[in-house]
Length: 251
Image 1: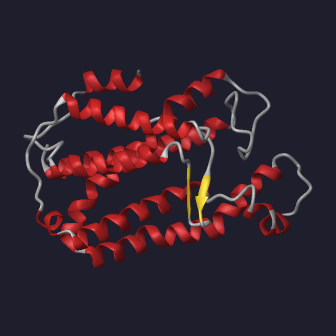
Image 2: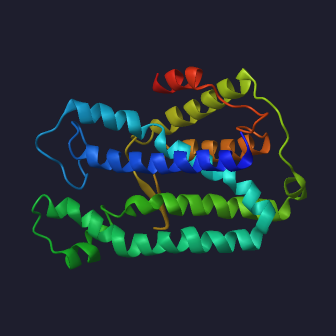
Image 3: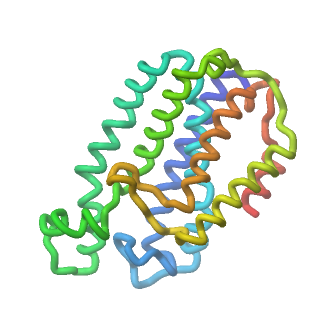
């Protein structure tokens, strides 16, 4: 696929995933066995919305990190580390900080408000928000993504081989996908011994993440970099067959 068409395809895929994020968050309110902390829980729940949540929740963030990784290296090579980070500070860093400080607290307060907990917003913000209910709402994604971009830019700055690298046309073998799947599965299962799948953690109140899923985000971000460097989705490069990968993904 030509570069322009490839760009439109991935941009459209990202927009579609963002729409699925909205559907996911709306569906959690009506699902059975929803997380106890979820902002609004409808007493009338449905297994339909439960299955919809399970279907959507599995792939969406991995897709987002894959696409971000795919676009990262061309931007780095075009701008250089300093200009690249300046752009990410404006487009990702500022929305992350403003969203986490100004919009996340009212969203978190919905957990109390929807349950008629007799705690005012200001009291909630001074106390429970910074302890048991601390979160960054949906803006956690921007924080983790900004951290990935920061680390990649630092490696790029000091690695001459990475600076000189150009996309080279190669087709992946089945061993790559088997090995990648096995590696992600091992990390997921090992961390799941210590954390539940819906547990959240934070690092110095800066970076909020789910420990069980964090290795998946890292893995798919670097898979995106690998895919771009090996010219996947180009006219001559590797283009996954939907007839094979869609049933595999659903399974």
